[in-house]
Length: 312
Image 1 (cartoon, one colour):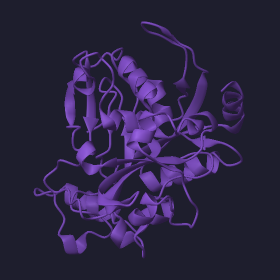
Image 2: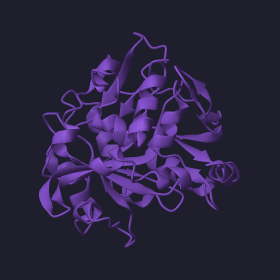
Image 3: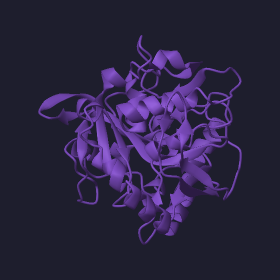
Image 4: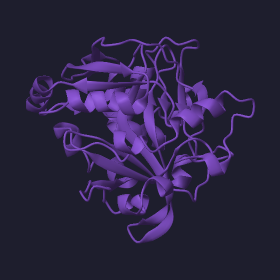
């Protein structure tokens, strides 16, 4: 689990010049975190402060703040379930990155239908599990149950690029992302989604372990979760190199988590989660946090974002 310490309204350097084995030339981009006691209220506050051309920072942008001291919630989500993608039926994981033109499926209004209070009470019990009849919009492992929260199959729609509000989102296969076909979204900060098979997602095992497990024999990033969260192979490689600079409890390790190998994960239930970037040594990429968490989204002001776009 990501370590969480309240650190309100301290500026976050989301992008900077970093000297590694080579110089990575970037534009310095500053964001402001908004700490609130729960996810929906924090997201409401962040959306309000990002009006008129600002941005609630997605995971791929937050990841550029490594090595970081604090934890943040990303304007990015993982959704999983059965469906058809590019005429192939199967089980998929969709990483949806918000942008200046829209956010995710799990809006503040949708969160209002999730029994967060019931979840908090159950997590304090000895068993720690809720009876399925009392889940109130949650799955057995405390993700948002999309089947209960929406009147239509929003996961099936998402696989085709459809959003619950009737708008569309550009959607890319994992192979297309590896080929860099999505990169225009990283320049203009617009919304897009990445589709992996559940089999690919399950190849990433959760834990605070060696960074080397995420790369191939030549030291190149190979892990699908890192590539999906960082939004690209070059970006994933940069994340790996930045994570090696993090001074954690054990140098050379990084915390990665997802629910896809958990015993209570049901691959046939469409479900969604928000993504966390950890801090204080773990610098983790977490996709398995409970929805009762306190929250800290990061907002990039319109002026700063316009300057970054002009530099791209």
